[in-house]
Length: 121
Image 1 (cartoon, one colour):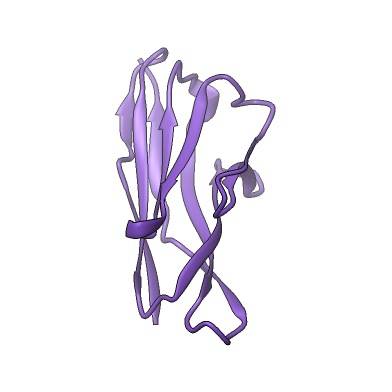
Image 2 (cartoon, rainbow, N blue to C red; image 1 turned 180 degrees about the vertical axis):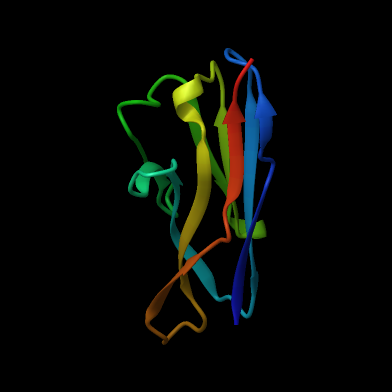
């Protein structure tokens, strides 16, 4: 079984920074595309940023220039550095990872449990 555990959420003032981490653990052969999503109350879950195993990245327009996604393949971990944060960044942040359990197995998709990020003065 594979688990994704997020950490690093909390309360930050507007203009401040937070760094989220998401570590995948279990019987993992390799992790592939890893992504961060966020969901504010009453809203749908939206993609924030994605990174492939080769470290090709994409960002939502709302976070471009402020957020940076990165990963450590040896640790099966993805990070989200959030700078110049705004109140509208307030949401529960979820990570998602595409994982192979064995070299010959299909790719499975796993989600973390979410971590709350609140931007407020």
